[in-house]
Image (cartoon, rainbow, N blue to C red; front, side, top):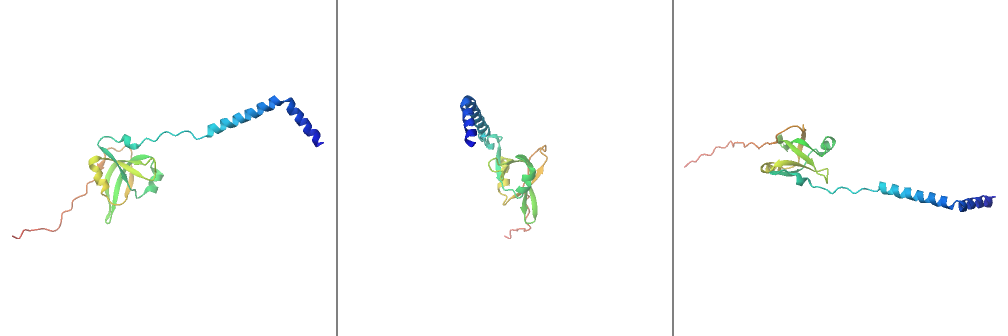
Length: 158
């Protein structure tokens, strides 16, 4: 009985060889098309943010004290206030500066600062705390440290 059934299948295939060949060919074509459409597409070449820095400004990398909080609420860029931590508390060092998340490493950030104000950011030791501002806020402002007067009074005794 088994051989009888097998013989009938072989005879049907012989009679319909062209049809079987077309079915196999269409299956292979569908598989190739599916593999090509699911293949990763070529990504755009990376364009450095440095190409978009306005004249007279610099992009200053900063160490952020609260990166996990920023991951939750900040996209690739925004407007922020920066605070430096000191033993007596914290002090605002910049208002309404534009911040950028590093495109190649989203855990790192940089702020856009006028060239002459960049040293104020660089000299701050340790990480800064970032407070997000309304992006429509205008007018970047860097807070210069106040110069405390010495309580010592020097007199010339000559």
